[in-house]
Length: 163
Image 1 (cartoon, rainbow, N blue to C red):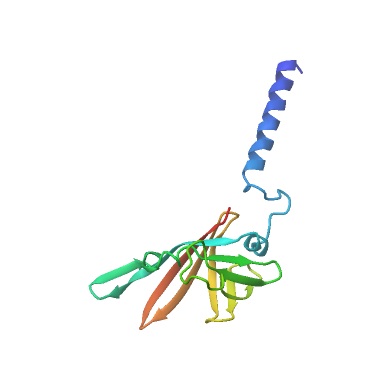
Image 2: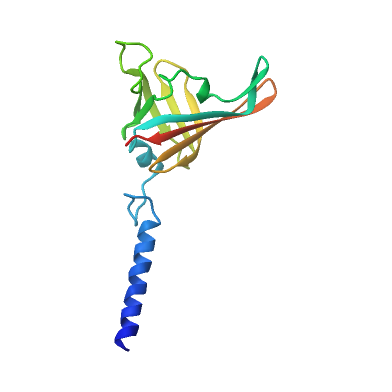
C-alpha cells in the first residue's frame, strides 16, 4: 500500500474510535455502562421542574406547572442517594425556615430489577413509587401516574445533577 492510503486508513480508524468514545456520556465506561442504581447514587440531584397533565383546576385557573407554585426555598431542594440504598432530602441554598436542620426527610430507596421504577420509603412522609422516564449522568426524570375522581394524571418531576 502507498503511504497515503495507510495514512488515510489510520485517520479513519482514529476518527471512528473518537466517535465511539464520545457517543457515551462523559465519564461512562465503554465496556460496562453504569446501572441505574449507580447513576442515581452518582448524584446529588437538585429539583428543577414539576408538571402535571392534565392540568389541575384551581378556581378559574388550570395549573400544569406545579414547580412554579412552590416557594423559591422549596425549588432548590436536593436528593442525595447513597449506594447503600439510603437517601436524604435536604434544603438547598434557600432555606424555608432559618436555623432548622438542613435535612428535610430521609429514608431508603430501591430500583426494580428492570430499572424502570424507583421506590422511596420516606421517614417523615408518605412513601412513593415513580416510573423512571430518563436517568442519565446529568438528569433524572420521574413520572408519577395516578387516577383521581376518574381522571388519569401524570406528574413529571425533573432533577438535574449538582455540579
